[in-house]
Length: 196
Image 1 (cartoon, rainbow, N blue to C red):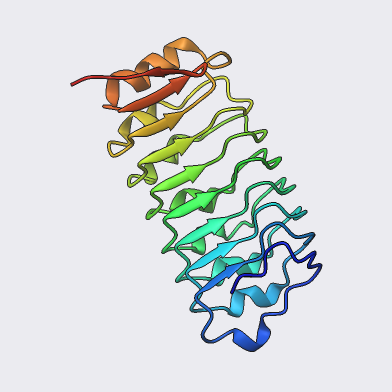
Image 2 (image 1 turned 135 degrees about the horizontal axis):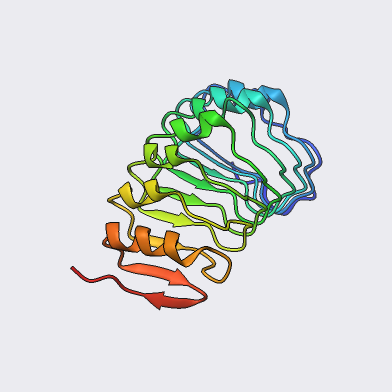
């Protein structure tokens, strides 16, 4: 159900809760999502990109069928503690928010293949990032990271890794480079290829 660019201030989807598979309310003026979003049990794709959201309702963790979630260009400072309940999630786009930390359950998103976290305020990543073992794309540029956890080097399917190498300790970058066979490694906006 596309509802983009309609200057929507609320979400009128309750009548579709049993059958709705895809919902796009991007480019509106939403400042919150109602908790009833957690009742959209068949939802596979949700885009709330480019709104004014400063939080997501905890009920979003009930969307067990959700495969793609786009929350880019909002005002999120944190994610719900139960975000890890999105057990089918493969694509998560969180670029251009104000996220500082990620909840512990975040690292339970074991089916994630795409994780975009660029342009946030993240200072640290835990070693448990290697729980996201299916990641093929990880974008972390424009954050406040000073060091990468060594465990990123165990994300063996990672083929697209974007960081801001100017701020990050070169030793931690080197450790990750050595462990990974990355086709596209971008640091300081320079592509770096690691060969076999």
